[in-house]
Length: 295
Image (cartoon, rainbow, N blue to C red; front, side):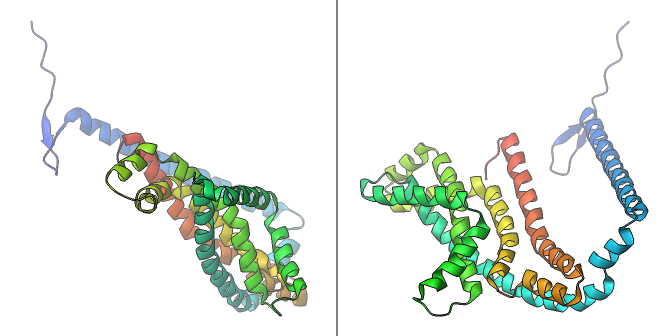
């Protein structure tokens, strides 16, 4: 007797390739696993939320906390003031992003340079990044915000301007190190190939090194940007009436902490799109590296 032949029917995929019965079963299994995982995640999330809600309801101090931090009345009253202050945070953030991009790129280029002429600047850049990364950003804000006006050289300076300078100086140290790591990660053969094609050193850096480095360190740069979104709220310590300061003013007049919750929610809403973008791009890079693909 002879064994029955194994079924190997082929099916035409939309792209013209033939898909075997085995591959179809694999796809069905993956879809089933994805649906099962989604249902499990949904159920676990619902259970978690229910446990949290029950725990809060059973807490003896929950009514007082609810009235103090989650009052609907004070939420509505403070929302316009906090939102007006948030526009200042957004303006400071936009200016700070440009300033950090320029200053950090210059620092990274100086630190990766091998020119003997730039040796003093390399030492200065090393000292700068080492010191600034070791000092808390709020201390930098105090030093810049109160130190520069104390010199009496420029007259009265708006606190938001001083806060922006402090944020730029603080974050440039972190971002420059991220960029430097990206520059150093570009293989030397890329530079050699560009120079062999007749590109100058500046053209090689601008057209070859920087684009490749940015792709490699994009997730880290996005994380720094998200952190900067939160830290621009610290300019309130200098007296700038931003979202945090506006919330503080309302709290001082009502003795209710709901305005702080309003400010927190607005900062979260401002950060969520970039957090999702960062997660998506990081996952995209991971899949490309696993598949061995190219940009």
